[in-house]
Length: 427
Image 1 (spheres, rainbow, N blue to C red):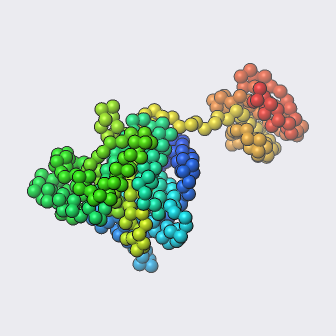
Image 2 (image 1 turned 60 degrees about the vertical axis):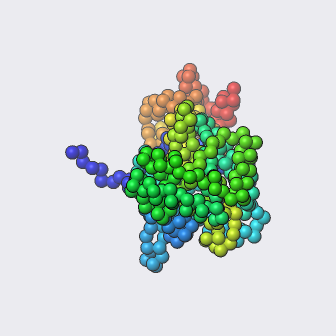
Image 3 (image 1 turned 135 degrees about the horizontal axis):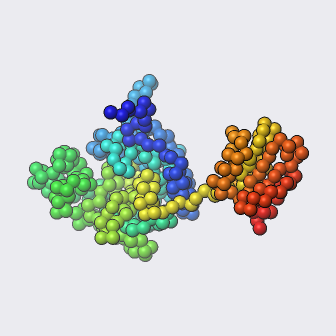
């Protein structure tokens, strides 16, 4: 058997290597540009929060709270958890900072790592990155449509293809209890055909059954009563308005009457943006969210209407690669500095600073003394010009410019080298 490496990443964790940083930088740039346009301000919350924030906010019967949180007790006996999602911490920050006293709505966006103790599988990690948007202090249905539109615009600007919004309403505290009772009765008569997890969910949190991906549960779900048929008049009108706004914005969508999302704090509108196959089948969610008008009351006894969502960075990167989307490449250097001897190395640091100030990208190989090996690297990098600085040139205050295409060499004053290179590059 091959010897196991001594040090590996923990299960479900992964390194973000330089080649993936290009994709992530592209995502970050698009998110920042679009959120700034729509008037969102960036917020960062701690990676660690009190566990109660999630158990109360997300719901005790959710998979996240029951199975997936990284929770521990500190030396001071505080019970903390690595944040599994971003909305509850932002509502906490909104309440703690008294942002309800600001002109409403307050629009916030975030980007960072989150943690869930899930079974690792393709594209799903225990440490993962998300960006999200939250609009707090506005009950209007137009906000629901705008949040969906912004996520759609971000994914569209990233050149992702075959996007489809799936949308549903899960009602509120007025109409949802009746629907849950109806659904519970329906599932009770079919309990034996459900998977083990859903048998338990059908008793404690029947809405969670609608989120199950098991084939045998899917058959039962497809015949289940639909929440959309049991909305109260307020929820029905709210959802109708959201649909009209999406129509006007020409956002492609389809109703998914069994879409519920995985967190208890959602009310009314819920959505996911999925990649779909040419046949119209969902290939997986890229972003999702919904309205959560009751969360602030649970956490701070203050009724605050709110709407938001989040998107998984790793999932988006994977789809960009699958669809052959190449992020903008880093600018290639045009100049290579070769130096020979200690005096030349000392001068090289100043030369580099001069080129940086002139915004001309230059590379070097300061650890090498062999001119031949340095020129070989310059050729490999396909630079336009090579600079050669030896002991003689250093003492004379000169430097050699080599045209890498023709091999022609010119000696110039060291003080003039930046201006000379700039002139040649601008020809």
